[in-house]
Image (cartoon, rainbow, N blue to C red):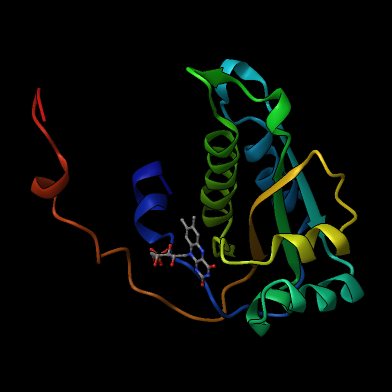
Length: 169
Ligand SMILES: Cc1cc2nc3c(=O)[nH]c(=O)nc-3n(C[C@H](O)[C@H](O)[C@H](O)COP(=O)(O)O)c2cc1C
């Protein structure tokens, strides 16, 4: 697929096959995160990759949908805000982490794998289960696995004229 096709076919997948993910595909997904741009190239991210069955079961307390904690892999995007770039007192840690997440999501799509951004989770609980140090924030996570549902291409979006401003607002 070219980039345009990847962007169009990516959808949030909420049903996964038990099928294991090939190592090389898994590697390319994580590599896409690692190669992402970040403010001042600080690369403030850490990716926790959960494959262990027991830990995935515990992740039920973090986000209670079975398609999430029963997926073959969960990737948790963590960021160290202290090392992230800053502009006018605003820290870029969320921007950097989100870019890394989306890079992995798009690479996963290219590999035929499904993902779903998960933002509505209990951070205190995930910190405890995954033993995350106090100075690290948990930004987002995604299940990763072969989709067990077919979704149509991205359609429900605002129209171009609603969001594009030519030359000035
Ligand atoms: C920052 C962010 C947080 C999200 N959190 C959740 C979530 O907690 N649970 C969920 O099922 N989907 C979540 N989503 C997925 C969105 O609902 C989804 O991307 C949106 O409805 C568009 O659908 P699509 O991804 O299939 O194109 C999140 C997406 C983003 C970008």
